[in-house]
Amino acid sequence: MPQGCPWGSATVNNTDPYSAPPETGMTRFYDFTISHAVIKPDGVEKNGVVINGAFPGPTIEANWGDWIQVTVHNALENEGTSLHWHGMRQLATPWFDGVPSVQQCPIAPGSTFTYRFKADTYGTSWYHAHYSAQYSGGALGPLIIYGPKHADYDNDVGPVLLTDHYHQDYIKVVEQVMAPISAKLPPPLSNNNLINGKMNYPCSSTKNVCTPNAGVSKFSFQSGKKHRLRLINGGAEGIQKFSIDNHQMTVIANDFVPIQPYTANVITLGVGQRADVVVEATGKPTDAVWMRSNLGKAFPAGCNLVDGVSPEAVAAIYYEKADQTAIPTTQSSASPAEIAFCGSDALTKTTPYYPITPDAHPTTTKDIDIELKSNGTHNLWYMDGSTFRADYNDPVLLEAKLGNTSFPPTWNVHNFGSDKTVRLVVYNHFTLGSHPMHLHGHDVFVLAEGFGKWDGSVVNPSNPQRRDVQLLQAAKDDNTPAYIVIQIEMDNPGVWPFHCHIAWHMSGGLYINVLERPADITNANIPGVIAQTCRDWATWTGGHTPDQIDAGL
Ligand SMILES: [Cu+2]
Image: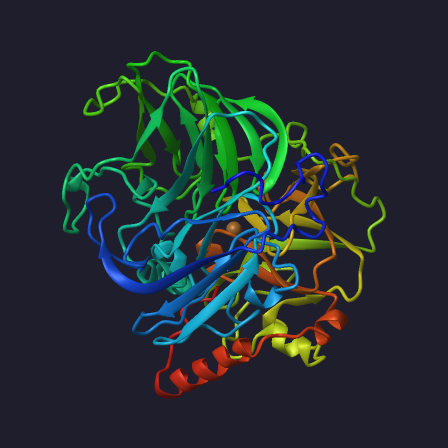
């Protein structure tokens, strides 16, 4: 895969990526079982959540225009689950986006659910569980969709999955996040950092059962050739800073959006973000070098909540004549200043390859403030004055299908009616951390970012950056918030989560639902299997009481 161009004559240049996708007539079938297992990706044993026994889960591959069909068996004893296909637009299948309380009920323990959706865009992404912070326990994997090329390269090296790593099981971490203020617990700190699920760890730093020298991931380069790497931040919290010793990278895509190539020394990825880079193997045939992904220093000197033992993941790159048993001895090409900067590359640098000019006069413009506030007992996240809490038993989409447009306040539903274009000015008032803001069902235009109050100016107004996760930096001080301005073409009727992708912030309610064109939802033919998830969930919860330890997503 791919063989030839099953998507026909479409190129990155000649085809609007948001028009109807091609039809290849092919379906890619996958069968996943989600279960608990003891895992030790860095040699340290912990209770994880695995797919088909493995962390990371299997890589899903398809061509642009294929259908992807994934049957999911929930073999967890006492938790619901679901899978979300990050960045897929789910055109005409908004019920298969995979978010409990939004488009379906959780898949009950012992139950099976089958997702089927079109590969309606192409590039690099990932899938992950969307029930509580379950994905941070390991229920995730790469999702690669092959499509037309706009940059030259020889070898597709495949996914390079970057995940911050915790030695406690995810429920323990969530319990720490959600502890009452009176418990005076610090925020959880990540313990390690992994590339494709591997890294070493100094066993003297843990009380868990630990095997030293677990090993790192290995990659192959051919001298003189160009290699495409598909970088994915599939972590829980940390901003990753990726670099390759003695090599420059050319960025060719951000998330699912091909861009005008530009060179970079360090790639910055917030949780959920991806970058496709092309690396020319300029070394000698005998070279062995490190690739690195660094979480840097802890706040406030750096960008993340790390314990400082092993924030830098490494993987070995061996050229064709290198001794593959040798450990590389190269030094990092990333400067301390590059590692310490908590924003993305400037919007002036990231220009979509297929240009689209957003509407300068959106139907609706709305300010949304993000704040961390006490509700009396707990510190929770508020968007537009309200903290989110999922109702697993009653998906918003099924209510919208019935014509219901009034919802409990804690569902945080923002009904944009039949609006054609929506502009959101999102302010972060929190001084101690950034938020990688993710919208489901869309790429968004990113019109501007900055500090203070947005002055209305737009970066590259004829063709601004588009992507599905944008980093919103920390506020400068109590009176100077950070902001991003995004714009959404309301061309995809459905209920779409808009949230921070930091698992612990989602646990604390940093989440809203965007209700898009509800009148069109009432006419949709939602498959009966969606309502069946709710009957199965009701049956299971009839005999078990799930402990909803956080906002639910
Ligand atoms: Cu956040």
